[in-house]
Image (spheres, rainbow, N blue to C red):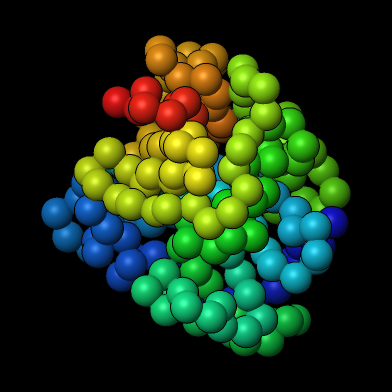
Length: 215
């Protein structure tokens, strides 16, 4: 169970993301964003070592909301220098290394577990509280997602491909959408966030496709 510490971070997560987001191929802005946190959830690391957060960060400039999976570690992750978002000083835990979680095997493993129903989404800012706004589904015999997951990015988002060919698309630019599985997909993860000057909405965070069926 992840324990949420209400303390200081220097720099803050949003300060790190302000310089990192514009480097991504799916970034929809024209310059540096003005960000605020507008939603998201957490997953527990079974070993209790790695913080796992799926943050929704909204750019006030263009009213665009981004899905940003992050992991927080107490030491650098070997071989993941390319995925480092930045380092922070945590008021309780000390130095923390923040990574693009799509390149962190702990987050990826727990994301597969969430889709298959073996893990529960946790509230973003509360300890030991299930996030009931997160939806998930999987219509298959069991994910063959064990082993290294290939990661690629384009303007559509981030693609995670498991050894059996199962492909998960993380929708980095979020759009409100009805609950349910997208056409052609065999599973999904959905969540909620706050629209600037508008209601709280629900949309797709990730869509799962069988081998050879991804759009």
